[in-house]
Length: 409
Image (tube, rainbow, N blue to C red; front, side, top):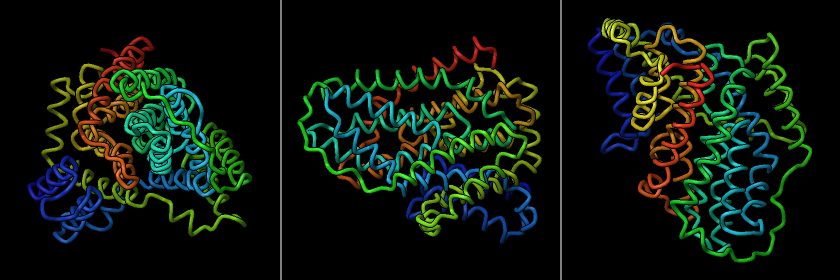
């Protein structure tokens, strides 16, 4: 029994690394779902066992936060902000700075994947109309989205998962990660401006301001109020996922916004990926190999409790299987991580996602959305800026975590 489960587990994560199956149009979510079906049909995992493996509170929190983000998207906030940035006067470097600041700020309080999805085509088209190469601005957009999302427990999917599994306090996490996230935004700007300096020497063409993107001001205000109340609820004894679901339910009960539209904007592929990987990693965690692996790692001091172990693990795992599957795998075999180590895992795995195009879902979203807008962001384009920005931002995080006492070297 163990050998079959182990084979399915390793094939699943091999699929996570390649992102597809030769000859089939399966993406990572499809691969994970296929693995769960195989385990169910083979009888190696039962329906009840499958249900107990899935971390429902994490999925509820992630769903609720997606509803909050959908409120902003339907209110036209993302489109209006992206349009204002692209049409802003000033130099090419000033435009880049605005893209980095706005993307990083929004991603700290809203899901970075949604920010990238909504803003990418508008930024790409707006920058092109200014007679500029959109690529450095798109790199600034996604680099800042990843870096900014590292500041909070609701900035990206892996932080949400880590916060739920470890029971991390929202405000303590913010205090630990806000400074390195802010410094990382500066590093993202500096690296992109340095690597793409020839493109950023161009003078933006003046452009007639378009009418603001259609939106609903009151709905945007309502979304802002919902975020503020949500932050207060995170400080209350109410379970985080319950508070978030209350806010999501109130937003869905709208006279203006159609609930079907809001629910349709939820990233169901990501939720399904989470659910399937919970099942696959849970089945693997019950095998003898997993138990022996945990004991061997413990005996050799290889758990990522220290920076010297966590940094290479976060960098390699995030850029092979993606930072969300990497975090799920690490948590499945890491029995007793403390608060400092979990904080370090969230910060470092998020920043590591900027290294290569495959490092995070946000990167892939930007590349795909940019291609749809007629701008090709290649693997090499991404690596040119992604590698230096990742090395610099991870160095910042290492120093901060060490000096702050969250992790030892």
